[in-house]
Image (cartoon, rainbow, N blue to C red; front, top):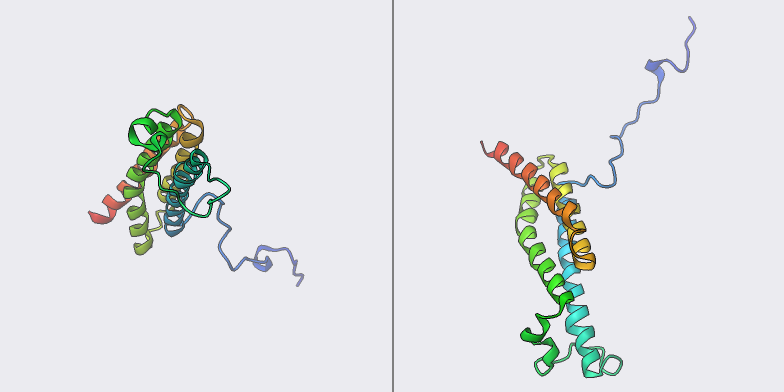
Length: 168
């Protein structure tokens, strides 16, 4: 009896699952991406406005650059003046929007991770669109963040549907 080494019964079968795509994250990894995005956004605002701009105005950029300056006497950094700066308006609005979405996306992804629900698509969409929205709106402004803003609703809608299905 002749046996061919390439018959399906003799083919080498992988013992591990197929590789995942780079952008499809688990629910827990999606939560980590959302947390990292929030952290980087906060560090950016502190570094850009509370540290770099304040030290530049005070003339301390290279003298006392190791600490945050007292900004109470800098009129350019007071609410009335800073609120007029278009860059600050854009960055501040981005930061507020990011906080609003993180407050619902992060707990949802963490819940799915705790239940091992396998809702990786919804959490991945929520995570990557959070990053895309924060970067596009913070650095480029309107209308470049719009695709990410729309897709966040898709990701959240999928997540809410999965949560609804788990509950009822």
